[in-house]
Length: 446
Image 1: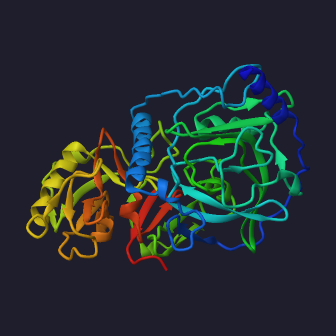
Image 2 (image 1 turned 135 degrees about the vertical axis):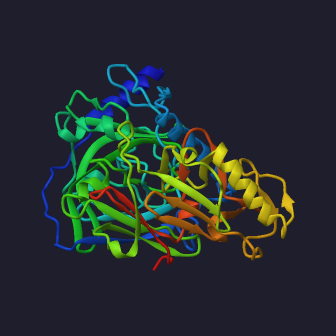
Image 3 (image 1 turned 90 degrees about the vertical axis):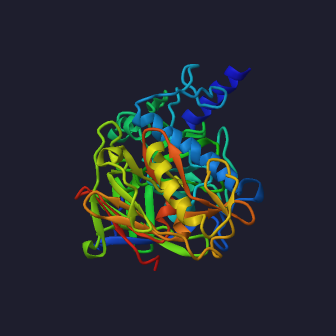
């Protein structure tokens, strides 16, 4: 019965109707695009998670899945997930899943328009994902609950499904780590899989993307999801900004400069996402390190860390570790040798003023009190190759766990370092892909 159900779903997917594609042109010659960027827990956010999924322990759990994925791919490990009871099939076979990124409910989202006429959708921003996708009717197998109406392909005059012999279909393996599937009707099926066994499967499609009222992108390639299961919150899907030609950034680079920047807002503010030209005078830059085994991820080189102005006293060789900057990881991870020294120096200063508290999950350095009540938190400065830095105050260093308990928002990892989004909050961060550099500028979101 299970096999019959899979075959039936496959046949339905392979024979659904496709609207005829009609071309458009980019609407103007502006050098950049500005979009509002929102925190999912911000005031009035439609994506604010319910109480059952909003605790810090859940955030940490999803974070750990994502970190494990990064650790595995840097170590060149491949772990397969088999969910054949839920996946689309071809000739009674299942799609082999490789580990991808654990999104959880995501942290930051933008509103993007898709189709002709455009309909707008809340999409999770992810610098660790290449392929963008959203849930599409008829949701032949499953769609999770979302705040926006589902995308209806037949309602768009510019929608098309890509055939299997297109360059975009051939690029799926590099973008998703999963091979494309070709239906008997020559339609390309993608699989975007994630480290916590979440996944999206559906048609590789093209349509008109509307970023602002005057800025559009024709033939935007994305996934039209027909089976979307896992921890995606109530977002319509994911917009990928990784270094890959199928990412939204890669597709927009033909019109705008191959660059983007953002300011990630706190839960009480609003941020911005800029696609295109970067003003170099605002930033201190560090080289963007190209990793041949993981070319879509953004690597940089950590050179030193100071606490209250004092270096940790580690050798340069101890900082020579793969370091990723990522919008989806919350808590910054450091290898044990670096973290242990950071923790020691931080506790030395903090314990003179604040009582220590038991650890909270992976956060083992906690104190009594709230972030607002702690006025003597030592600055932590993360210095990168070339002198660019993140000079972190209390809001970027500490995170509130339980009532009356606040913890250091750093944790240990194996073999890699990850600069998490909690440390990036309210910093302006630039990804100048064309010039292979990453920039940092303080000053808050405006």
